[in-house]
Length: 239
Image (cartoon, rainbow, N blue to C red):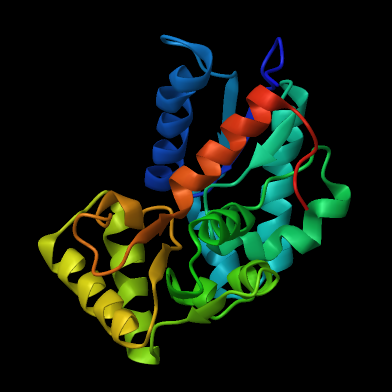
């Protein structure tokens, strides 16, 4: 059932490139549900990425949560009905702020887990920042659906993290970065993975089904599509 008036989506942004892709996906794909040129109302707020990185470097996830909650409060004041965060890594801070949040959240890993289960995948490679792949952000959501995870090796984590933080967040998309991701994903395929999670919202800017050794689960677009469905169809946000 489609709501008469789509809900207002609030985007708690962190890094610009991933947030821009998420925003663009909502606006472009909204036409498939609502008609030409149409999409739900969208508002976005972001603190400086430098503020987030400073907290992350010090392991201060409560500080990360405080930044996210600040954005959430601003978005609630401008009328957002629910929130999304197109940044996988900082989902680690959600437990520190959800009880204080003025609005419900859609969880990016839940959107990915739901799609993986729908496609029938069983063993997933996980790519992303080293903070993400060493966290329980994906292990909890995927494990709840009986899905296995294969993370990058220690050396691979450092290289992928360098590419993400020194290239992708700055809008630098180099062939060498693509080759590095292809090597890592190729090893995951050899380890028995049947798909790979693009678990940093910038990774889909260089990797997709056409150049990946494994089918991809694009966390950025999957979150945007989950937000679109929520906005158009209504109903409570998933846990």
